[in-house]
Length: 368
Ligand code: OSB
Ligand code: MG
Image (cartoon, rainbow, N blue to C red; front, side, top):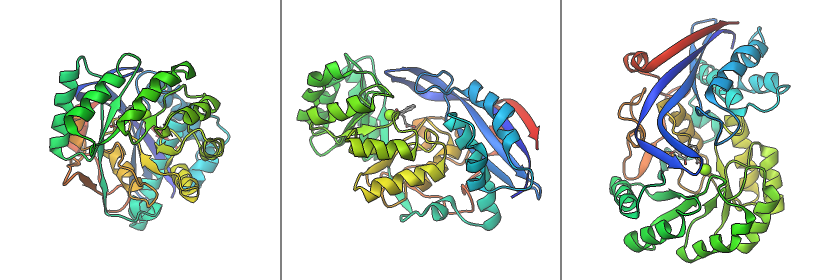
């Protein structure tokens, strides 16, 4: 695939409701979209997961655009490249996984549109629809939380994830369990808000039959996560700590987690995400697909990945309307708690030009 140029496009996507986590509140998503154009006019799209501020991880959207413009796009081979070749070309640059991921994914989309293969088929999907969970932000009160969860359960979500932080943990979990019963698939995500000193406190969550506790400790606390995992009955799942297949292998060996949240952007792309899936599966470690409040472009690729056989837990792959009143693609709509895996070439979906133009705040073209 010969790339003639790359467009970096920023869009502003207001969220239907503020989304509060232990690291901050999001009211609108400032998204960087990448469009690669090949010499024969084929396009490939992808969405950068980086958020406005470096709170979830060290990347942020202006920084991602800068490193793409200055370093990553200029490093693409001029004589043609496929997605695996993008990975090799970007390997000399450290870090910047979200920036690398968006470029590799856009090239993969263009490549697959040329060969007519879908993302799901290319990655090795074994299902044509995936069960969906929903991530529920920290609320101002328990009644407000119960109303939100009730709405999601009524929409058919098969699993609820509650965001937690010190001061919003045991009580909301107890309230949701009491109201919705023991059969509700329930898990929590702390986004690194605790330390090992909190182990006895977090052990109180053991009474509530949670599927898992996600990223209780700091991003680089792999050893402490292994210690914590021995003190809890609730399975520990890692998100922020896993930035590569090597991290996944280390975490499994160390006993730092027994479940992994795979976000392709965090680990540098869908090819690395599949490697983590393969390693985890070989060790009997369940994985599930995380999310970064993506538009339909990012969602399409995540849903394809979530259809791989090792994704045995429902993902944070919610329907478009959980995030945005109007998505930039045809919306993903839940049916019986599932989303259909796109079947068309590449992502199998593209931005709707009118909507895209309306939400675009800037565009930048980089010729190769
Ligand atoms: O930790 O999983 C997380 C959103 C933004 C950043 C980090 C996380 C999340 C979510 C929501 O939990 C996932 C989604 O619905 O896209
Ligand atoms: Mg998380």
